[in-house]
Image 1 (tube, rainbow, N blue to C red):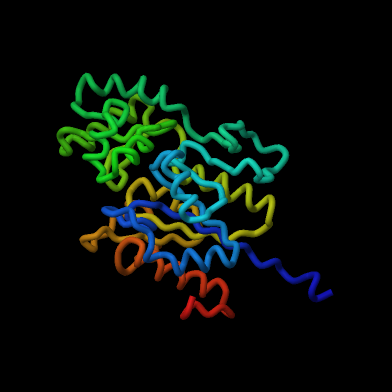
Image 2: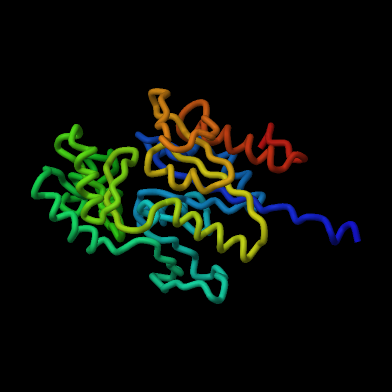
Length: 284
């Protein structure tokens, strides 16, 4: 009887931003994080990628990381569950290229139609207006990778000619019904969804399928705050100069020490060890 009344241990889920967090912001390398990634895989812990990158970009990265978990592209425009994922029977979704897509945001065409009105007052260029070579020059990606970054479904990254106009630009965007947030490199325009809303969908699905879950989130930019504010334990990653973006509302974050995938590796190994006290991560 004592066994049957024992409270079920929660399952661990990890949500992570990519550039400047799991990936080096300049080289996009994740190899320093391999010990933690291998440990996560060995323990069957879902690792949900949450990024401003496109589905096309994340698909390639998931293959390199051997991931089969859901993922969240373009600042939370939707959640892509693998086609074989058993969603709850009453969960609304649409089938898209072998995925089960749960929408949180609006399509990119609606975003672009509203963004046109911003052109009357501000000078900026969006990815929809740039060639793959121009995007490559802005990001450090190869031209092939930049072509994948241009395949937007929900979110328009933009380069504002005068960065000093950012606050007023975003205020005007909000008046037009657009969300306007800063990522690691660009200002992003989208409608409806954000990383937090998408993460909450994933958490709700896993809770219904698995029962209690404990969630960890890692990010480094303002567009990560909605995600960090809905997980159980939030890790704020520093930029390469050692500074952190501060959330004006919440401050109860773990402040990671170090930068990019090296820091990601250390903090994830530590968090997994805390969650599984009997597990030694000293020699992963």
